[in-house]
Image 1 (cartoon, rainbow, N blue to C red):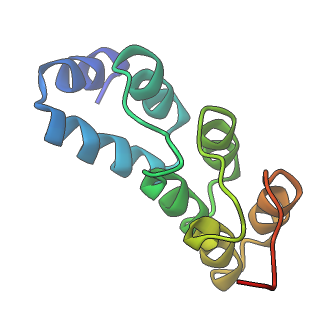
Image 2 (cartoon, rainbow, N blue to C red; image 1 turned 120 degrees about the vertical axis):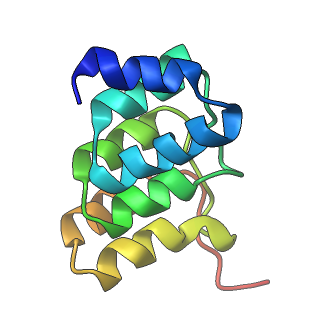
Amino acid sequence: MSKQDWRTEIDLASHREKYKIFIDAACAGDVDKLRYCVEEKKLSTSHEDSKALKMAAYYGHLEAVQYLHRNGNEWDLSDDQYRPIRYAASEGHYDIAEYLINHTYGQRSALP
């Protein structure tokens, strides 16, 4: 599919379909689609909605992880949002786990 074709597909999609395309782009490491979804279509990369970041980490797409992290996916290691690190490490993507550890905002606390 050409760049213009996927842009048209995104433009014509419902919000639910856009979100699915966004997550699929994260799984595939397609930074161009991620960028278009975030910058042009204003899809969320918020702390509360880190599924795209988790999927990019799981599938080993460092560039996609870096893009998503720089554009809103920040989290605190003391909450449940540390999963991208765990997903990356469990799949052997240690470069991604290291990037996320080194660029995480907040601090991990051993105490509740």
